[in-house]
Length: 114
Image 1 (cartoon, rainbow, N blue to C red):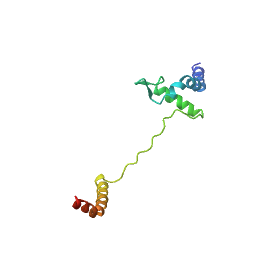
Image 2 (image 1 turned 90 degrees about the vertical axis):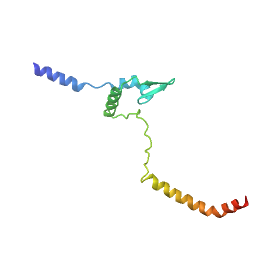
Image 3 (image 1 turned 30 degrees about the vertical axis):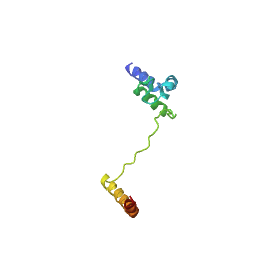
Image 4 (image 1 turned 30 degrees about the horizontal axis):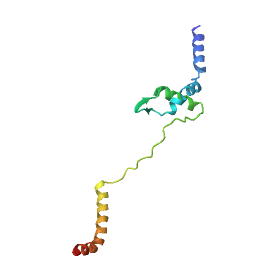
């Protein structure tokens, strides 16, 4: 008797499908407002669906073969400059000094004319 009850429970759990289509229809407007929340009249409002339920809905949708259109847009990766800042600045200063030295004769003539 207990074996049959256990089998029926396992069968019921196996057949259960998360109703993602209904949930998606219900929260479509809310999900389109943003991933974490949105600003409304100068105040931050969290979404009407929790992150846990949002993640479950996303997972069930991906398992069903649909793609999730509510992902946040990817930001551009910031490239980190290599090396020490002082070395980079020193090279810029040397270049600037070389340019100024080329202009030096004109600067001296302008100074003498004053």
